[in-house]
Amino acid sequence: MITLNINNFGAGSVTLKDYQRSSLCILNGKITVDPTHLDYMAATRLELDLPSDFAMPRSAMSAAILVSNEPLYRFGTVLHCWIEDNKLCIEKLTVWDSYGTYEIHINAAFVTRGYRGAFSQTSKKNLTIIDGGVLFRFKEYRYVETDSYVYFVALFKSFPYYSGYGQGPFTMQLSGFATDVLVEIPLIVNGMTLVPDQKGSMLTVGSFENGNLTFSYPENAQEIGGYYSFFNFFAVRG
Image (cartoon, rainbow, N blue to C red; front, side):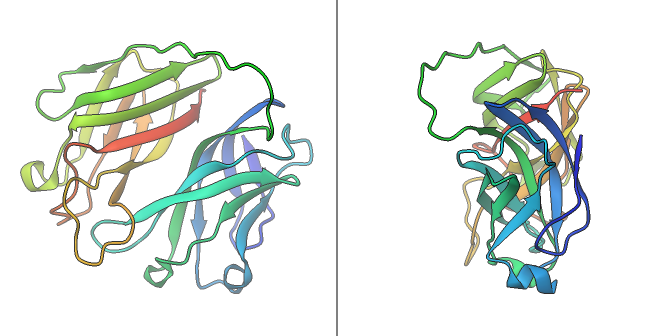
C-alpha cells in the first residue's frame, strides 16, 4: 500500500494498492473528487505526489475510469492517466461536474516510455463460471495470473439486465480466479440502448472478493446491463 497525501485538487489522502518494478507498476484504488473545491477548479489536470522512492518516475500513457454521480446511469468514461516527474497525473474532464462529487477508479498498469526490445506472449489461464445459467456467459475473455498481480478483461454475451432481473445484487462465481484479489472495479453496462443526450457509457461499480464478482444496479435504471457488458482491469494480489 502507498498513501498519497499531497495533490493539486483539494482531495484528502488517497491510499492505493501497489506493485512496483522499474519496468512495470500496477496501482489499484479509488479517488473521490469534489468539483466545487477551489483547487480543483484551478487545476488543468489532476496531480497526486507519489512517494519519493516510487520505482517509476515517468511512464507511458495508461488509463483510469471516471464514474459520475449523474442520476440512474452514473455515466462515465476513460481518462488518460500517467506518471510524470514522480506524480500520478490524471486527465481532468468536467462533463459531469454539475452532478457533484465523482469517483476516479485506477486499476491500471504503467510501463516505461520508449521501450525497445522483444515482447513475449503472456500465458492465459482458463476460468469457469459456476452456475451462471442464463445470467452470465462469456463472449470472450483473457485472464493472466502472476504471483503478484492479475489482469482480467471480459466481454459478455449474457449479463443481467435491469428490465429483466431487477436491481440485484448479482454474484458471478468463478472457478480459477485468484481468491486473494480484493478490488473494486467499474463495469461498463451500456447494453444496446442509448438514452436521450447520452454522454459517456452507463456504469455501475462491482467488487471482486474470494474469486467472485458482486454488483448491483442503481434503482430504476431500466436500460442498464445485458449482453456486450464488459470490464478490463489489473489488480494487485494480497
